[in-house]
Image 1 (cartoon, rainbow, N blue to C red):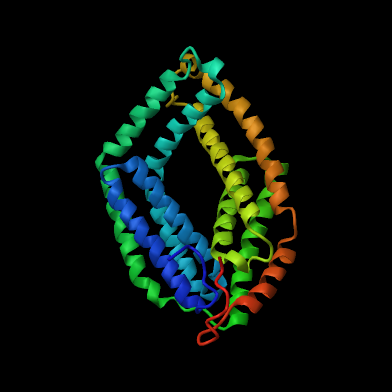
Image 2: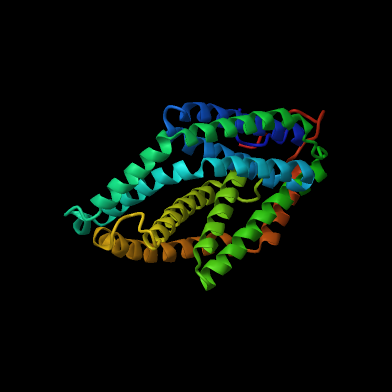
Length: 313
């Protein structure tokens, strides 16, 4: 089975299948996170993002179900955000050290890293994490029980419109975030762009050959942009901690080099992200998804149609 909609099969069944697979895997990763939180939490949150991207894609087909489930898995992800972020910040310091080896050669980032490791340990070893994992597990198990209540249009033309609507909404979101990131440049603008880019990348996987143009190169570019935006987001989080009044990362003498490297890295990442996003999301969302709807109507097959219709691959 795969994270891809099979156009030979009814849309409802395919979405139920994929959603059950993603939440099932999220539950497996939650179980693993009880003993190895650094890996399990990250993998669980990735599965939750995939599930939410799927729900966004088919939202117009069953708005009540999709909105409710999307909010459920958003809340679950929020329960796990703090411990995962603690690990991501350590990775950020390590990336800065690797990117600027001469500047960090004398250990100017060591004190900050030590504090972040201690912070990670406190979050991973405390009873709060186990309680969060327990609450997340219960929510996902309840979500699994609700999957069978999803009901989408299965006729090819209606199903095609649902998929086109979902893809279009995400492209519009990306275009809007790109415009704001270019004009205002706030951290929230880049974060919105990151979320839209990640969702669009997952939509490309879900749609396979239903997307009107070859997706391999586009998917590679979208994934690269998502990684860059993720690194930029981590820099924003680190800068916010650096500027906090209670100095959680330590006194100024310990964080001086960190502040310098954050500014240099942030400047280059901002520029790269804006350029790459403009290439990907500069086209009209309406034009792109109009072609998608037309191709999907031709390719989708309803129940009982010829089984020889090509599978999206």
